[in-house]
Image (tube, rainbow over all chains, first blue to last red; front, side, top):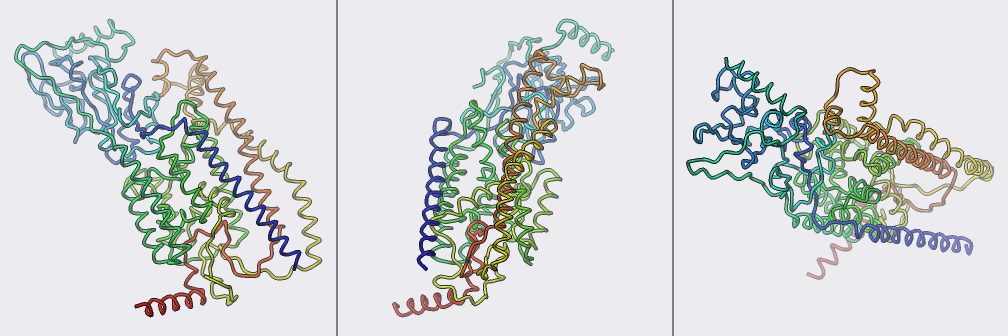
Length: 188
Length: 434
């Protein structure tokens, strides 16, 4: 019986020391990481200068309708009559007929401002983030159309499914209090 | 005519701005004659930081309540209600992110990558359940983890899994933990998040493959209790070890075990250990020999495991996007493949040097090969220790919950006659005081 008691004490001692080691390990982890934490969360965002508008944003998002939408930096826009983000490569006519449009969902609204300028605005409800207009605008225009993760929709997954599929590595983690990388705005 | 005009314009641009950069001002922004205010680019705000703290507070409260319900109140009903709450809050409301299981990767990445700063919320989600487990056992698994909750709810007809099989399958969880750490440390991928089987249910959207995987887990989970928790969960592996030495623990009986055997089959997770029989003398010698052999064999196993994992690191390194890209570029240069991919043409457009890319890729490969040794060694070590554990024998005089395997669901409480006595006494005491 005495032996048994000793055994229990030894086991308890062992357990207590392992317990202490674990606790110390957790403490050490916190200590090590304490100067590497940030108080605010990070969110995903597309760097528009790296984005190649491949179209993965429309298909890889875990949401059925992607959290990525096209946005417009109006200050950079040339207000062209023939916009290469709006019109398909071979439009039958220069009007807003669906057959002339590049956007598969008709999400770009073209409004007349004054001769010869037209304004292009994005109807975000319709935009699916495919980036066709972005490609057109980057290749032939000023590049004022670009893709951004919209944070009213983004779930902020720990591993963004689009980021994993992004061919140009344009996805970045940015601080949640500065969640957009806007073109022509010095990334305000 | 229009078409010709287009062609002329386009060709002109192509000639002028060959290799077109991004955001070149080709058409100067107009100065309108009529007053026309420029519309603002809208920027819907991200989720506010305050909610992150609310998540942590809810986690803390749920952990505290769960521990209280298990150890003090001994109420399966309370645990069940808390479990449903956690499923709704951390699962469906927070849509499965942030979670403690995935936080393993954030911790790893922040240790290995000096540029990555871990959000304080993720750090606390990783840490708090571990600290609670050190004190109160696996109260996190019991009623706080939404992945555990969704599996616990679908468990209809528990079938017991033989101990050896359960222990063998659990080796996968260790390997999964090792792989998660390896891929996170090298910045390759967050595989725990990528293959989280229940996330599609929480978000009510997601890829078909993951949806099918989740459905399979739930289907299996109707018969085999919590298959993800027991055989896959990498966080559960850590909690198991901490739970072994926890200060307090779940006990089946509130006071003394009378060995009535009523609780024997009550645990759907195979965590109830029966009292041991006497150890026959001849058996003892035999297993002593086996134990010695296994201890000698252990280093050999570890080296073999490390070697095997390092040997396949060539293909595992393809999980990293840079390695994939470098291989693609190399093949394109060698002429073994035709055409370009989005990734390779994007790379060429940046004008970065190929040598630089190859160097970066081989650096990552080297890291993954080294990591492969550690990973393989770790998995083999766990396997070896499991074998040694089989030869080790412990004496138990009572029915008790296995410290490591018990997820503190509280199902066994009501099977214990002593528990019924306790409840009756408590009820009588309550009536008397009234």
